Image (cartoon, helix red, strand yellow):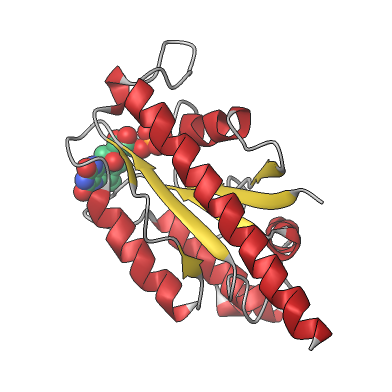
Length: 191
Ligand code: FNR
């Protein structure tokens, strides 16, 4: 059975580098993995009153995708030294729609930015959020695509060889971690 990875991008921008990175991940996915891409464009701002009336359709769609996922890839820009509201909002909704959407599941983090640090500070804030959600966030490899404008071609291909190799390693590690989690779960069931 292939490993199902849900990729969540932190930017709604049409030519977002993080969106390009996710599309590249789909092209570079390990043979035994399938990457589905979450669409956050119509997820409303979290509001308790809205939730009380029932989860909006875009949230239900996202929650169903998260349920099906064996692992997650989150690619995000850095906004004001942290994660963009769009991403935090999606995580907040997910944490309401399902008791533990990330619990026990491997999560790989990547960031792309035109800046020199490549979104590092946002990654460390995201890690903190994922601690509360009990995700199995990969510590290594770390993937920061700095000066992203120099690393993608005009057609959106990640052309930088070091960045491509970094993405390859991240996806291989994520898939292996998901296989390991699967094996541990089936051992526990058999015991
Ligand atoms: C930014 N950007 C930014 N970059 C950075 O390295 N550190 C930061 O703190 C910020 N803060 C920030 C705030 C806001 C409101 C915006 C709109 C942008 C730059 C941003 O990370 C960069 O443009 C990324 O390339 C955007 O990601 P996408 O849309 O290309 O995926």
